[in-house]
Length: 90
Image 1 (cartoon, rainbow, N blue to C red):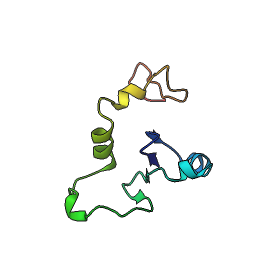
Image 2: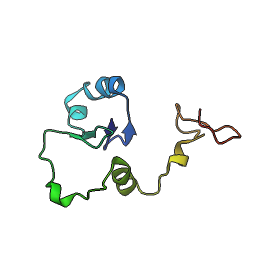
Image 3: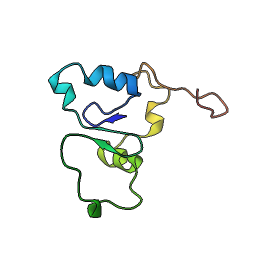
Image 4: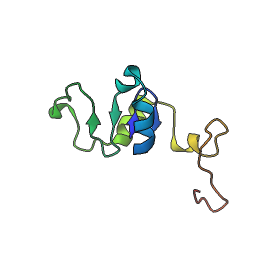
C-alpha cells in the first residue's frame, strides 16, 4: 500500500495498524501497489488517465526530487535497504 499523506509504502499489516488508529488516519488516501485506489471518494474519469499510467508514474509526479536511491543506505530511514559492492540490494 502507498499512503499519499504519509508518503509511505506499507505492507498490509502495517497499513491496517497505522490507518485504523483514529478518524484522521482513516481518511488518508491509500493506493494498492497495482494502482487501485482505496478511498471513499469518487475515482477520476478513466479518460483522464493514460494507458501506461503506473504507481511509479504517480509517485514520481507527486514526490518530486525523490528517487529509489534516496531510500538506499539512508541514515534517516530506520528500515532502509542497503547495497553491497556488487550492486545487489539487501
